[in-house]
Picture (cartoon, rainbow, N blue to C red):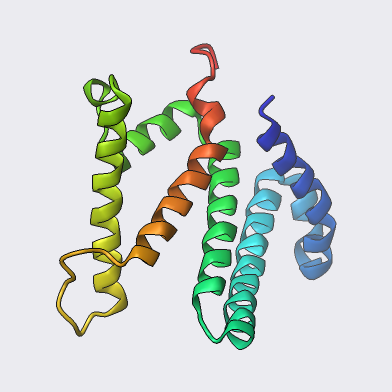
Length: 174
């Protein structure tokens, strides 16, 4: 079994009593319906993650007088959450297809490492430029991406890529 899926099952088992206490009206229904329990635990994790993100963003801003440390922590938290969720829930073929589609990589471009890195760099640059336009909607679309936004995109893709790496090596039978 995938170790990340095992970790997620343990989290569901650990958090289900908390969800049952928070929602006593549906306690019996949760006990019978494992899928609902997972969905409620996942929604609870989203709420907790939003609270953590807000706390880190404003807490680190108070310490460093900059939002950048809080943004770094937020990117790490969300990429860990999404990577673990994708690795535990999605089949390996879906993960591989999604990475290929998001990065615009075909089998012919993966033949050389330089070609692969070139394509990924081009996509990260395009994403960073668009994120820069979203951050400052009143200004013109930047011609070159902000270095900080580029690093955050690289960090996000890197963490999710590492967490989803087992999907790339699963056998065809699974």
